[in-house]
Length: 261
Image (cartoon, rainbow, N blue to C red):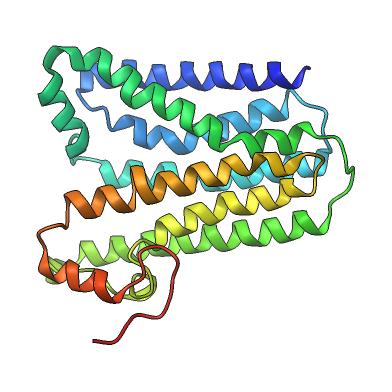
């Protein structure tokens, strides 16, 4: 199948998938379903590409397994974290702002935008399965897999540490600055970015693979400037003096040793 047709089929499919999530969100009045579906969208794209392409089979299978492990973990993490907590404050604010128009606004501003973003971020994941050469696993594959694995471990461990911290009533009102959170204010976001840089390194060994650098650049920029670090710290912690002190001594993204007082 033509490479552009494969990308188009994947884009349309993931758009329909997210639109289905939008339809489910309407009676529930909860647009946060889109966040839970984020990880599953990558799993869908990975396996859809797998069955459309004739690339090097071991690399195809490895990429699909990697995407599935990462995507399912993220899905279950976000779904369980959101259970019983109602709509995310961001979407609730938009619902109040747009009123009855939020029904359509949420379709394109929440669900279809996420479909487009995850498709772009998954460009490397798709191209890595399309390319037929080199028909062997290379050092790029090994290095990329190790970077991906490190990212998955960091993201999973930091999420687990934060969940346990928040579950302890004694920590109410306190800032999480233990474990990986001692070295980065957002180690989970750093781990997620590392996952996609790892996939990029795998694809870097393929012809024209360097062009897929858009994938890790988009997810890194998104996590740093759009929906991650900047948004959270400007909205949730801007008036918290303890968090401002935490900002002063702790790296925002890449883990590093904290500054002394």
